[in-house]
Image (cartoon, rainbow, N blue to C red):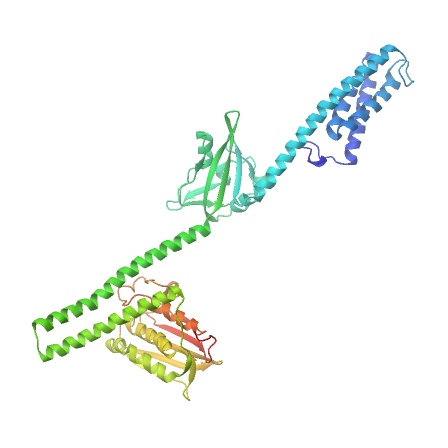
Length: 483
């Protein structure tokens, strides 16, 4: 631990060189003073060298310096000069006094050396500890100027410790309110001013030196010494992931709330129609009335059944319990089933459905009912979101050993930023929600079903008013085991 000595960077042979130089310097000083001192105070200048060497190298080095130094002084400046030894009682007493004084100096120097080295070790341990902490740590003095920051704090703020030392805290730790963008009150200043632990308000952003904005939380505590505040320590952390998790939870909660509102609306409409038909049957009986009301009830009951099926599928999506019944199925039969299921939406919009199938007829390994559900959902959406009558195409062909099915419309189109959102549960696209029907889970369900088949689904649009194209790619032979 010699190298941890706080005010000397010298180690090894350098320290011995310093000791020898100090001893020679003291002897030279005594020699320079000799014309005035003569044989008085011969060892006075030697004490400085003894103390310095003991401070740098410890007790044994100090004792050696004292003995060697006394020998030199004894020969050069003690009468009779030129001789080494104690010639009388006075010199013996002087030598004893020299040894006692030297011992006291060496003891004091070693004590100072011990406490200095212990302080250096404690500082080193503190630096290692602070550097190992996963949070950012910054300390400052009573004037709010930075005295230390660890590696995490340096990474978050963009300031190196040597650059930040002595800089006001507000320049290194710049914080603003996320909502108002106004500068936030620095907790360090409050901790120093009020003498208590303080923390940040929510929604605080740290502005790093390179302009990055990092959501953080922190706390600052005063450093108190003998009853006075001499500084403060700030501990802070990057809460980006935590904030994203909270935001995701809030978004999910909002989507579920919107979903329940849509669900209530969707259930109320067919129920109101069924109630109205029942009322007419009760008060205006007749063959024509019965037939018309029966058709209405059947139509709205099918709508309610579809809604219930969607709710059940939603539950299966969230629990991961959707299972496929895989078997060899004819593609043309699957497409026919999908076309029949979407016929009402296609016809009500005045559209024409054009289907292109591969030749010769193709068989694939799939769950025919679920695959038809996917295609029916895509065709129904194409019809609903095409405000003007037009052609809707379903093209099926084999590309690179895979089945590629594309549903194309010339309707309202999709903005680039909304394409991925379409496949999320409960997502309502701005400007589309007012025209939409259903619960907003169809595309999310479709993607889950396609992926269960080992395939993929994607959407492309050139923008609003330019139509859209949904592409489903499936393996001809299932990559999934039957559940």
